[in-house]
Structures are given as C-alpha cells and as structure tokens.
Image (cartoon, rainbow, N blue to C red; front, side, top):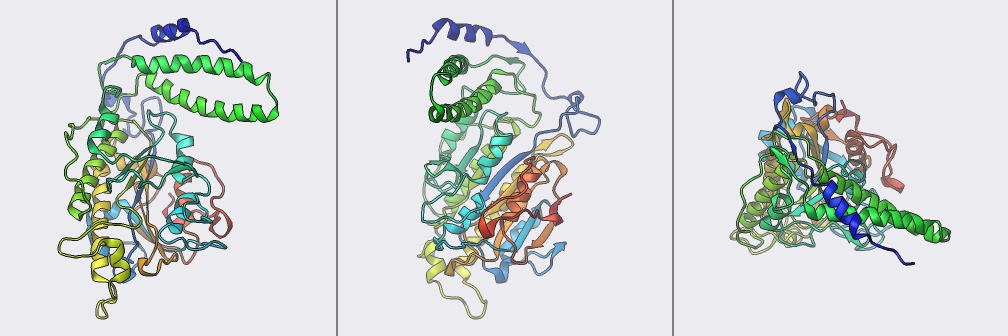
Length: 446
C-alpha cells in the first residue's frame, strides 16, 4: 500500500512544539501543607527498582536469629546497620522448579523475576517483574526503565521483555551520564523549556504512522489486524514517552544533575573495581530517578556466576563457592562469605544513596520500593529453598520497614506480588504452578 509521509505535517509538529514556557523551581508553595504531595493533591510518584547480588549466602552468618522488628545483624549482613530501619530482610521463602531441571545459577533468579521456572537454560517464561511494573507506571517518564550493571559486561541483565528482548544495561559511567544528562536532558528546574527538535520530528512522524495504520486496519484480515493491534500498542507506548519529552517536566527540588564522571576508571573484576563502578552508577541512577527520568530501574552488582576476585586469593567468587571446603570450626566457607559481605556492603551503599536525597517531607527512598534478590541460597549445592531477599523503601507509605520476615517455606514470589501491589498494580496473583501466589506478605504492608 502506498503510504504518503507529509513533510508539512512534520514541519507543523516542529512549529507546534516550539513554544517556550517559563516556570519556577519546586518551591514549598508547590506542595501541600504536609509536604508529601503536590498542592493540587497529586501524590509524589512511587518508583520501583531491583538490585541483584550473586551466589546467595552462608545462612549460619546471614540469617537473623530474631524475627520481626529489632532483629539482629549476623556477621555476613553486619554492614546493614546504618540502613537497618530502612530495609526488610526475608528468609525462609522457597522457589520451586516443579517439573523443570534446576538450571544452576539461573532457575532461582528467573523465578524471582518472572514468577515461573525456566524449562531450559536461557528460557525466559514471561516478562520480568520490572517490565510488568513499567508497563503500568513507567510510561510517564522519559525512560520506561533504566538498567545498569557494575560488572562492565553488557550481557549482565536480569530484566527482559520476552525471550529475545533483554534490557540492555548501562555499564559505562560516561555513557550513562551522557544518556541521562546529555543534550536531550530536560532539566525540570530550568527557567526556560524548549522541546528537543529531534523529539518533535519523531513525534510528528509517529502521528502520521498512526493515521496511516488506522487506514490499513480497515483493509486487512483478522490475523493481520491482530498484528497491527500489537504494533499499535507499541507505538502508543512510544507516543506517551515522546509526549512526556514534549511537555515541560514537573519541577523536582531533588533534581541536581551530577558532574560528568569524565572516564570509566579501571575496567576489571577485582572487588575494588566492581565497587567503584557500582557506586558511580548508583549515584547516576539515583539522580536520574530524582529528576523523574524513570520510575522503574534495575541494578546488577554482579553476574550470577560471579567472577569478582579477592586480593591475595586465587579463585574468583563463583569458583570459590564450589571448591572451597567448609571450615569445620566456623561451619561455612570463609572466603565465599567474604565475597557475600562485600556485596552486602554495596547493597547498604545503594540503599543509603536513595535515603540521602530529600524529597517532599521525607527522602527519595520513602517513595521507592527496591526488591533485592539473588540466584541461589547456598551456592555450593545450587539450593533453591530458603532464598534470601531484601526490600528497601516505603513505597509512598504503603510498606513497613525494619523487619526480618520468615516465609516458612511459602513461595518467594510473595515478595514480588507484594511489591507490585505496593506500587499500584492491581493483580490478584502472580507466578505459575507452585510459584503461583495470591498471598501478599502482610507483615510488611501498612
């Protein structure tokens, strides 16, 4: 079919989008008397994120002995003391492989991110939880989701739309900075706002495509109409994001674009390099969220088969978990535990970074829910029971924190379901087969 693209329509879009408006930064008068919503009653946005660490835990020094509030912090998670009241610790929750084989270092995290056990290595049953959330709350921001990895490897991602569409992570601090705060960044606190001409052209062209596709729909059969409907859904999602870029963003007092990192530092897999990369990517991610660039985000500290190395020790993390003998006096693998302790230190840094940004009458962390997960419980035997997890943040006041919650062998997918409900999704259940659950974790819900 001959479809005509009107140059005049593109020019008209550019002209219509070129209006300049003037506004003030986010002052107290923009908020309600309590400082926890905008003056018109619109609540501050709630965001959802994930954080991944590799190779589970040594339960002897990870699992708190006390349940509920005022829980203890065993050696492996002692670094969480500064953020203890801002997080929840989850133990005793299981993932179930049902009739599928245990794909080592894969099955566990896939269940925690999708609610279903994979049939084979590489199988991705359904979309990951962040995509499910983003399809509901992520269309009002510039980026539907943002994903980053501290490994330096662009293959390290735990987010995916489907089997063939993983979310490509940011691994370079300089590239991430340019993407977030480069020429197309619209500062929500700038006095003047002018839509980016490139965005205006894309928006105008997209409008033409929508008009033409509607005409195509009337002329094709049922199967082709279904394909067109799927295509239209994708286009409408793009339009919403482009509309956001063509509208002046709401002022955000917390939005203070950081300095350009200039370089990516040393690239390697030593703990020091991974930690440095994780922290600079964390700081960029936090400010992207504070500037309302995205409302759904993912951070991977390590790959599931972690190659992080320890100074003076010859084996990388993953190899260590399988080859290091259990110390009969301690009851666990001391070097493997060393790697876990470093990961938990980075989790503490991640949580703390959100808590340091003021937003409304609280902090950015108060309006966020972060779901932290791993790939296995005891990596030495690839166990899928007693999966350790964390949450951080209060989701706009819907979540209690400062708790150790024990699952009693119930599905670990309960945390994912609870998180989705807390950020505004209305699903009654999540997961398949034994991982299916309709039971939220009541102890953490306000």
